[in-house]
Image (cartoon, rainbow, N blue to C red; front, side, top):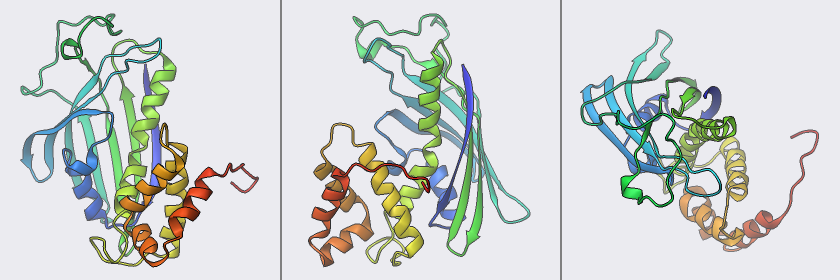
Length: 256
């Protein structure tokens, strides 16, 4: 199964800062719970590197999938209008050879086999990202992802994986939103536009809370976002208010 998708986001950072984020493939801010490994295999120059990523497999439910790995050649260039073009294409590298012994039909995990012996399936993920300045200190990111999970997987699994990959624009936006505030990296106050985006991020985090309670989600939100943490220092009741908001059940209206 092969799928593709597109996502966009307005980022409260310069295009150079977003590019630096994308090139730091093994940085702590780039890791997620589904990652088994992220690494830079080789850097040819400031515009060209080889990266590796491995995602955990699925062990629950009726469907067990092997971990997915990928090796990508990453290049970027500055366009005539000043925008930055970031491109990733599948490649190979001697440090991460593909396991040619596995069978394409043998995708399902054996529940008796230890996790250390589980082979990985090579996925391919061509990507393109355009980073364009929207106003001073801000930029718009347009991300296109073309995903081939390899092996044999149902279409619904492909759709879930593709949606998670397209969530990259959300993660970039989140990374720089977390730093806004007097105690952040840039030491700048939050504006009305970013305050609205913060609210949308809060509701997204509540929707994705999984096994966490509303109080735990809010505690993490306060701790991870500089502007909200500073707001709590000024108004102690803000965390209690956010917990009550998180417990509410909102319905979509014609305007949303």
